[in-house]
Image (cartoon, rainbow, N blue to C red; front, side, top):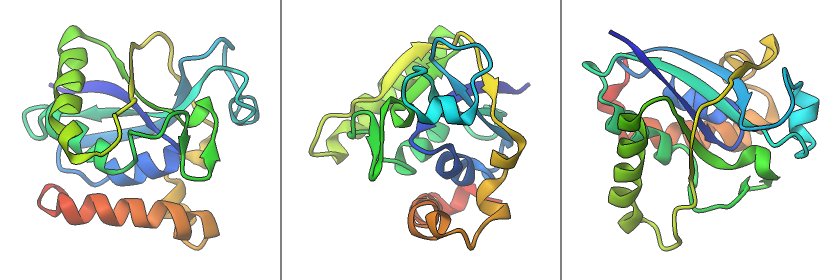
Length: 174
C-alpha cells in the first residue's frame, strides 16, 4: 500500500531529482502548497507573496522505503537550517517544509529532525504543517533536471545536491 507526503527544500527541481530513483518511490510530482491563492502559477509563487512553497508530492511504499529513511534522504538534499532560502534562492517559497497528512507523518518528521540535529551546527528550521491543498506545478517543471541537465542552474545547484544524496544513500537507489 502506498502513501504520500509533501516535502519542500528550496527549488522543487532539486528535491524531485533527489527522490526520483529511490527504491519504493513510485512518483514525485512538483507543486505548490501552504499559501493563500487557489491554483497559483509559478510566477505568483516566485514572487514570494502567495505564501506557497515549492514542494513535491512523493508517493512511496513504506514497506520498501520507510518514511524516516525517505525523510533522511530529503534532509540530505537541502540545507534545513536556512530560513526561507536555499543558497541564492531567497524567499518563503524556498523554505524547508514537511506537509503531513497523518499524525504518524508529523511524528516521524519531528523524530528525524531531532535525530539529525546533531549533524548541524545551526538549528534545523524546517516547518512542519498539516497539508491542506496541493497544486500541481506546470508541466515543464516535471522531471526538470532529467530533461534539462545542461541548464546552468541544474549544473551548478541541482547536480551537486543530487550527487550528495546519491553518494550518501547509494544503496537505496535503483
